Length: 316
Image (spheres, one colour):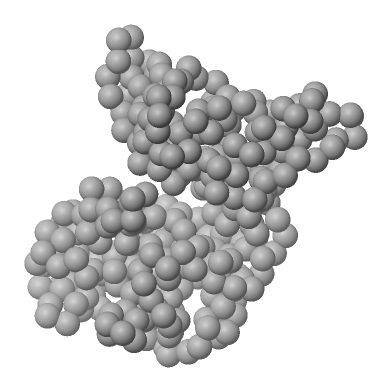
């Protein structure tokens, strides 16, 4: 589904098998050992729906840094600049679904994370210096540009919409304005106040100067959602997907920007979600950005039980 990673070359099958097992534990993805035509072995990690995660995993596995593991805590060091440490912290978080932090260390900076799979993650750092990302057929992804992703629970958003944490559609509209435009619109500067948010939620108004538009709801079933997402992405247009919970009456919107496996199922739809779930299962309100996940994962994270419609987007 989407992207595979091939890691090579291992002289001994037992070495490759060890990496295969660590990949399964660290990334929660299918992995297998395969023989190569040169008599060596490679590890194949499959089932990666998001390109960003595929390249994060690739980077993590080629990262030859010193690290130590104590129980469930991993320390990776030493990084000469804080920017370098933050880069690798983001790769670790995206690749392994963990929360990591950067702190000063004598001579530079270090990354720390806590995970039941810390030992497996530590063993994988720098384990496969030679690896490549393979894109499967039947996929397409539109570009992600400007400040395309916002967390609806972060104060950057809530402070612009009267303290509400129900701004998923508001965040989608902001994302659409940025994805189609040349300017990086922000909540406080460009979508702040009563023109953009009232008792009914997002008012439908786009930022001043934006040529992007978001249509109203089009109610449809999952089959139509999947086929429409594919056709809209193929035409170069982002599309907003609506899901719903009949038990609570709450809906949730996400921006679809790509698909894999010819958009055969919600697992194959790539979305920008303004709801961010921490590795411990709680709502993350500290991360400013939203997250890039599959539509199926968003549906699960947001506890929905129906896919109910679309909002088409474009430019005037």
